[in-house]
Length: 203
Image (cartoon, rainbow, N blue to C red; front, side):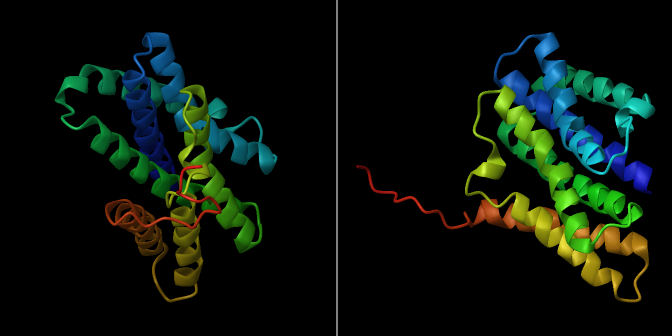
């Protein structure tokens, strides 16, 4: 199940990156690079932090094939995607949910404290998008007031709370992932945001 989640997260984030790159009118090479770094950026940083090298995608060529296939799929069917922004948001949301769980599982396997595991999950979920946005000349979503990393944190906390209950681990994974997705969707739909220190008044 862990491996399947990793593959699904890779697909979701690769497509997310490709959609952003296409919206920026990048060439084929640029599209592939953005799809690639979006899919593996957070996981690469996570593995480096816990000293797991070579990093995951370097040890398993399947991830490279999956990213390339996902990029080709998104490019071929780009005209079938009726609402680019909605599609981008959907894939990005699914991606952060899946990658949050992957990062948490990696932390657990490394015998780290639950707080650190949640942090690893958030890094795994968020930093591929950070690299994507920086390369696309955008302010990363995680650094704006949108509920993004917060959803990952709450999903991670949910995971550990449910782990204390007599619930099968598969269900814990699913419920925690759904929590991330629902929080992200509700935050965007109802424009829920974290407070900022800046005034909205023009100077």
